[in-house]
Image (cartoon, rainbow, N blue to C red; front, top):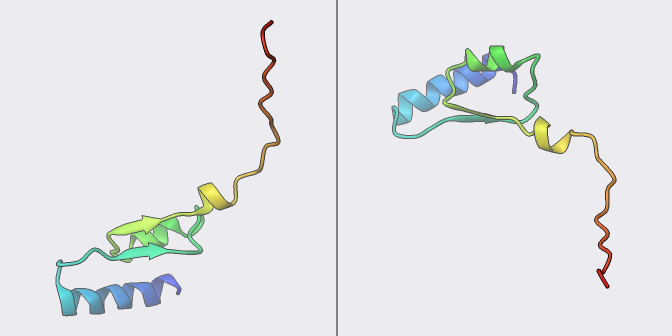
Length: 67
């Protein structure tokens, strides 16, 4: 959903429910479109980019027994 459509959806939700519920935006949100989404009026923005797009690291934990 683009920001214009999101803003219209937010407006409809507010007209129907008032402020009795929080409206969250989620999915395909990144630093390039974050400001535009903030301007839609949504209450909460979820960004999964920091968890599902981080580079993997290969590590292991090996323990030696003290004798």
